[in-house]
Image (cartoon, rainbow, N blue to C red; front, side, top):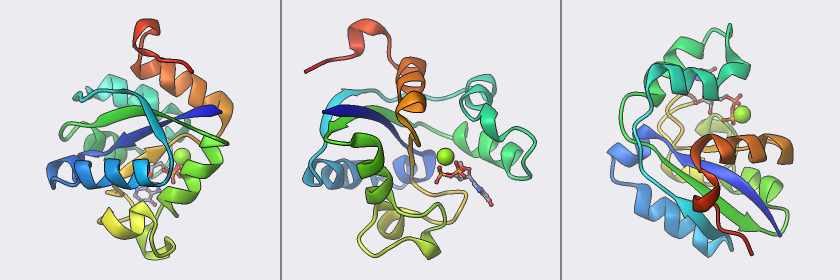
Length: 139
Ligand code: IDP
Ligand code: MG
């Protein structure tokens, strides 16, 4: 078993889609190991997406991610990082496969409902970004 980080983004939380997305993830076989609802400040959102600093969409991304509540969560399954990337679909919902979370729930390439870590290394640092030790359940 391994773990990854998902974030239900402000578009989906604001539209009341968080419960449906959570159900989709549970039905796909993920166990929810930690979960919280929070609102990100600009510094936090900017730091979380620091890898994209300088890209044309960076300012828009930070503004969007601070525009309302987000729901970060730790998900566990076999091969969790790859499995979650498959379940969420392509970044742009117009290109996402049928049945994926972004195809079902995302509005646009920017407002795309959910984040997922892209490697085990990034999953570990992204989990630590949102959850302190006592909030991280194991096993
Ligand atoms: P990912 O979320 O599928 O891993 P990344 O390329 O890592 O996609 O981009 C991070 C986030 O930045 C995306 O989920 C999306 O919200 C936003 N983003 C990426 N590319 C664009 C774009 O071309 N226009 C607007 N927003 C974008
Ligand atoms: Mg990414």
